Image (cartoon, rainbow, N blue to C red; front, side, top):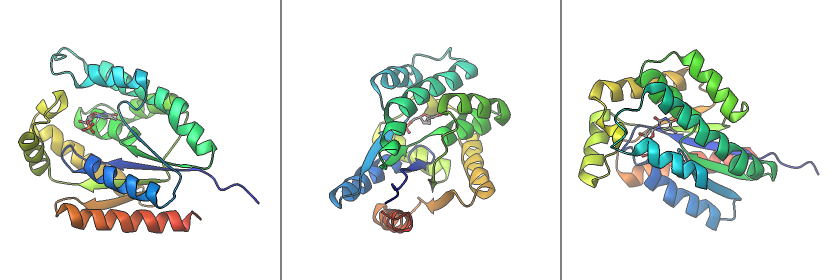
Length: 213
Ligand code: TMP
């Protein structure tokens, strides 16, 4: 019998969209149900990537210029792709990542207003052209996301950018989703945790079934 190909699913969305908490539950549920799921996150997900993550999120690093930031994300990503993602996909597994390359386009591209073409070039270099099979966007107004982060006490260096920055990020995500509707699914995250969770579960189970899992 022909081996089923591995599948790569990514979650994207503004800060405070509840993405990470949702993933905690969903991935646990899928693993319990017997799906060969491996979860990872960006930036980070490897020992080297976690060191890069600490540099990126450090509030003291106010001198960091845009290109440094963009390249550090790609460095962490290259390590993650080769060390974690590709080996699991090669075994026919499912990789679920909390953020991936679209975060670079949304934040460093649309957010910081750098040209998308140059970012696409370094993303391709870092990933070897690996594109997700499915990308779920947890869409949320930036004001709501930031409010949630502030009340949770989890503010980092990137949260300190102004609100226009976060609006450009959101609009960028929505534009990417519109341009590639076969890959993206947009979920309204401005609802109760349970409502969002039930939508996500349905989308994932449906897709996994369609892929033959
Ligand atoms: P998170 O762990 O809460 O998702 O935070 C990671 C932060 O890093 C978030 O503000 C988005 C940002 N980020 C980028 O700006 N570019 C990237 O390529 C990635 C992966 C994350």
